[in-house]
Image (cartoon, rainbow, N blue to C red; front, side, top):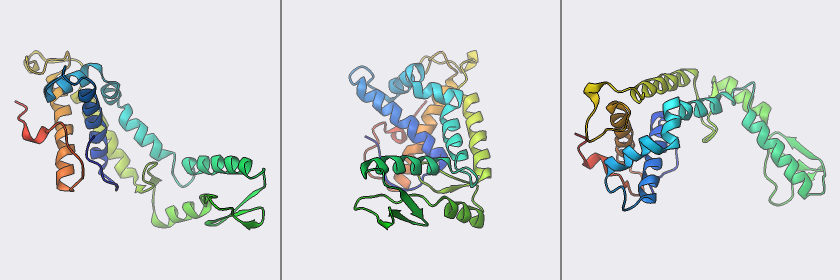
Length: 219
């Protein structure tokens, strides 16, 4: 278990949390085999699908593409939600017609049945985004994100891809961190874990931080 608290995290911390969680899960799964944080990070680099996705930029691309789906002219996640709820609930309530009017859901001309969820008003969402000059909505939080922030994410993605490239300079290899990748890969993952722990402490997140990165010296 790692520290958790609802609310929007900085985008780079969101990525750091994914990496941190994957390492913690690996450490717990191989308890007794990998006894140190160094071992856990090295195992993560050698074997983890999450590391592979980070190396290929997929972690960032998935997040970015999720945001791009929710521009004012698309709102695909919201449309898919409405379609799913409409179908599921129409089946549940004998196929009667669902009428969506602004923020209320009407059902066959009557008040909605108990437990019937509200649908998204797509026109209202689009209007709000245009009035507030929002470029996209995040899929997970529903909060706005700008084109500039998307570009920063792409730059961060490309920087990390370079840092964890497989080709290692001979001068960067060490007995402590040798994985077949550049030692910069090990240090990049360490820094991501450290950034996540720093964030959790500074923002008073609840829950343990099993790797205890901030108490250790990576050298």
